Length: 389
Image (tube, rainbow, N blue to C red; front, side):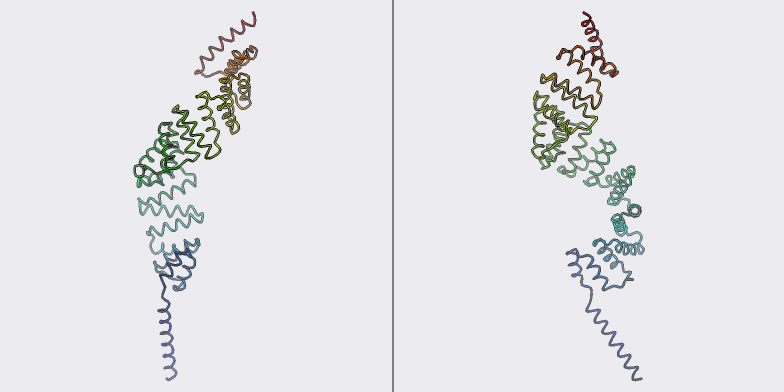
């Protein structure tokens, strides 16, 4: 009896000691905050587990553990705790979103799509889920569903600049330029100085050939500090098509001063701007740059334009050489005509003039060149008579 009393007393003392230890080791939320602030999320998870058993089913604790592991990049453990939460409440949107994000990080895209689909089934206005689904559908190459999800997200939040820009770019990829323009215009109402949206508008204006708008948008972007190659190149192109050749040249010179290089189409526009102002030397130098960068089938066209410049600069032999060079890359029928006229009128070479006039007719020129065909037929008769005299 005495021994039994001692045992009971001992157990009571042990339990009391355990209770005191538990009270003395209560979870310190300030310490957790310190772990979070230092981005020591794995340490935060270990700290939490030191207070709770592995079989814990309390939602608040599971949520904290899932968050810590998610932020630590330990997606296996993060998914485990979020799955437990999902079993407790299958309609919790925040849990579904975290499970979707985890599966995206792990490259488990079909599972991620499934979670996002559940989100929009629960909340038909969840913009973030539609936006995420659009990205996943685009990864799969399903542009119809990409379009549908982005359109829905944009309808819910038309002023959301990220969604508006992504949707507009997709519309451009699908050649729905007017729709892209409308989307960007609506988003710009909320933020008229948003550089990314203005850039999107500039790209759309280029596709729609709204050159005056290109100039205005380009100038606006430059004023906002965007002097990228893309912006300056499009601004210069706008100036060119508005026949502001000085503005075009000045903008391209600014582009070269800042970036020290341009693409072939930029050098081509610069060459044509110099040509319009009769700066033939500068135009020819630019055409040389075009040809260095050119990729067929454009090369033949560019050699033809270089030949035109040599002709205007009163360099007929160099002009003929450039036309002949163009044929190494592609046959452009009108080049035969131009070369024939060059030999006929400026080089006084009747034999070659006849040859290239005939080659031109053999190309079966299109109806819009009928006036050239009429001239060639008449000129062939005149040259033939001249040679028999």
